[in-house]
Amino acid sequence: MARDGQRRQAFAVGQARLEAGDGLLAFTDGVTDARGASGLYGEERLLALLGEGAAPAAALLDAIESAVLAHADGWEQADDITLLAVRRE
Image (cartoon, rainbow, N blue to C red; front, side):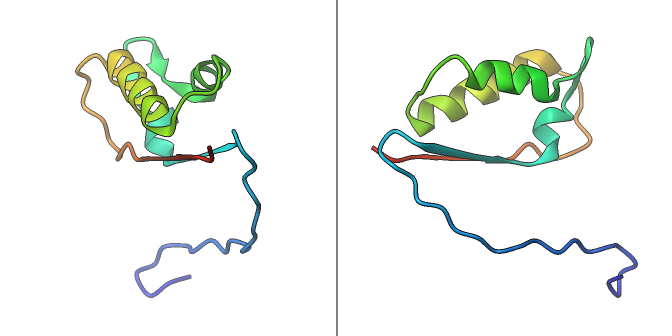
């Protein structure tokens, strides 16, 4: 427990080599927890979007951001929506 009373999680450090065409997507729970009229955006929607094919990292970020914002449709969000994507050419 940290001094501020919040639990801290330990994460293992690892490494991986991205081969040509491989990508990496990191996101905060604000992406999957984004609320809209039909509920949370959720992992299923995100995975479906990722399953549409390999795109350059910038295009992938744009597509996810557009999809999440369209889902939220102006609803106020309680968490940050943060994304990081890389793709090796």
